[in-house]
Length: 592
Image (cartoon, helix red, strand yellow):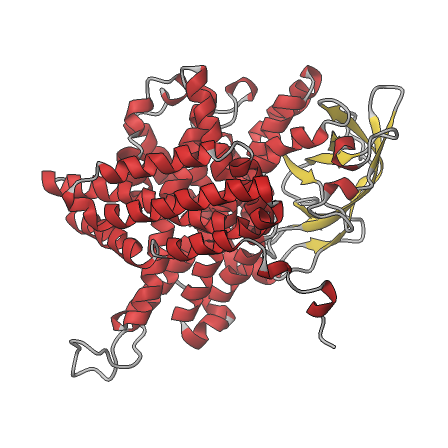
């Protein structure tokens, strides 16, 4: 099986050259990271993930996690040792707050590590992937006592955390949840209920697990207005076991290395985070961080599958090419066939373009906290809010699509276990579902992030792309011109969506998925314009690796020719709204 190679050179190209990281070093949060430190962190992160995490992947899928009769859970062989190495190396503390023992580095670097971890072994990453959001939630909503007691160990990685939202009868609709919280004389709460699909709900990686649990107090209002958030540890301060246990582990399509648990809370002691009945707002701090992380999972799956398929296509000999070929050979390598090239170029164009988009958004997340003026922080926050459902929804849709296409490159060998491609497909599928299914992400983008403000943020985003297209110059016309035309489709679609929201919300809902895809295609196209501009500038100046830079321009041209034309069709799908979707009576969907 082809090993995983973290894309260090491409990452540094994006951060140093495209995002121009150097110009932000005057901001305190960026001042710790000079050019040497940046390159060392990215390179060492890649080395750690390639050498320590990636070798776990195939066995983790085959072995899975094991629940024992006492409710304890054992992770696959090697997980515990790898997690200990991760903690000792300090990788989990990169972007965590310094006041609780973190390194306080920009979130951009944490996003790099998240991608590499997911590319190396997604099942392993599930245990620690929630920690950035969990720490932020406790730090924002917890009392000083809770922060002092829990955050140092959470930041250090001595304790891991979960996000316990879902119940068997209440998935996306959290207003239906039944878990209850009874007030206790000592100020704590007794939490009782069952939560399902809890990633890392029980494991042997850390001695304690901090569960962040949504529940209702006795006199809570109905629906989402009556949800509160509680911190419920597995182990209490006195060392005794809390009344929380793993009832079972789900048998899943993929991510076998991740313990996806049914968790039982039987009067477990917990503490309120924030105010009663305000839990959903606090939980969204963690959920939004998780959604950005899941988008990065889509990138990790795409990159890993692309690497494997590209290596296979250069090695595997099948059929004869239609152009120049080695006449002495019985067959040509797969890479000579245009349709194989099509799939590989689609994958490369998405992975490298989406990596730039992930890191660009992560930079804005940093700026939303650390930019010098309140106005700059507010503008950056609006960008992150707008892009979050796009990264999660568009990113995981395309990540899965890439994984399936890279499996196709292998032909029949992609369907058998030994090559590892079918595992990537199975692992990637869940990313489109959890942390809010992608249809929900589309509704969020259309309703809350576009129509609600009259399209102000969306139009400002599109205006930035249009301005870069106008300023691109003749050498970049090959991508700037088609991207500029695509932006006009985006502007028209945004106006239609705002009108639909005001006059017929059903049409807006019906158009929402196409709108999310349209924004995603445009955003990645914009990142390709930015990369092409840098690549062309370096070539003109005689700088950099000529082969690497020419490959950037070729991939940008492919994206312009093959992906940007989709915006025309997506605009028409937005215009269509929900009419035909709602034409049939519900019973007509059933086969008689």
